[in-house]
Amino acid sequence: MATSGTTNFNLSIDDLVEESFERCGMRPTSGYHLNTARRSLGLLFLDWANRGLNLWTIEKATLSLSQGDNEVNLPTDTVNVLEAVIRQNIQGTITDTYIERISREDYLNVPDKASEARPSQFYVERTNTPKVFLYPAADKTYTFVYYRIRRIQDAGIYTNDTDVNFRFLPCLVSGLSYQLSLKFAPERTQALKMIYDEDFNRAASEDRDTASVQFVPDMGY
Image 1 (cartoon, one colour):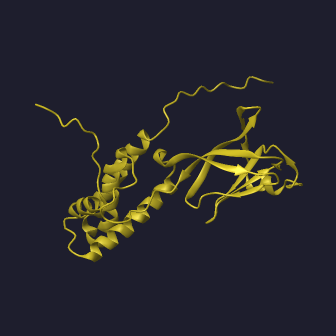
Image 2 (tube, rainbow, N blue to C red):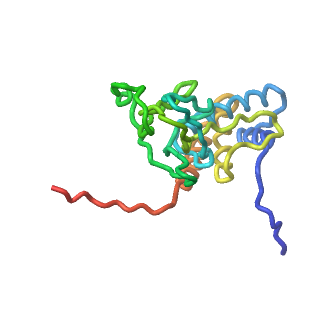
Image 3 (cartoon, one colour):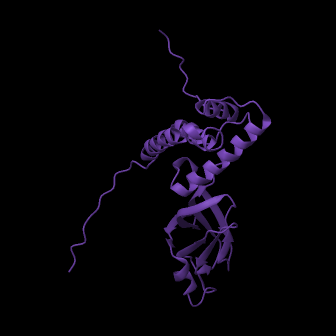
């Protein structure tokens, strides 16, 4: 028997909402049902951001630095910065240099934040308008290259697909089902929460970097 030959299954917001309501033992029959489901979905995405890394939301980005820059704005959908380098063009050769992330306290204790050289440290201010503070300030033009975690995109219109990796689709359905059960089917909440927890743990354990890591003990005395 022939197979489909495709691997592009996804769920539109409509399909996701319908499947989730069905698990609650009902069907969405009004605009209110759709609106409340989309609101719960948005809150679910925010909860996932708080739970840790979602690898499909990690992306590489760059910021241009000019002389004197020691503070630059990040995109407003930035959740966090994982690592960064300072990139410079040295006689036609692109060179990336490691830059250390420091804490707010460490940056606060820097005595001369306006001193200029190649930046070697950065502090991330995770506010509603996230920023990166650099030390020393740039003494010439550089590029700040970093990997960031971005927010999961909003649901938007009901014909949109979700901004979720395929590995998390079962978890997304069970999570939304659990959220909706709190409002419409409390008798199913406990069972749906157990399914959601199992689906999330299974997806999260797979959503990881599989590169090998070697730990070497420090034998110094």
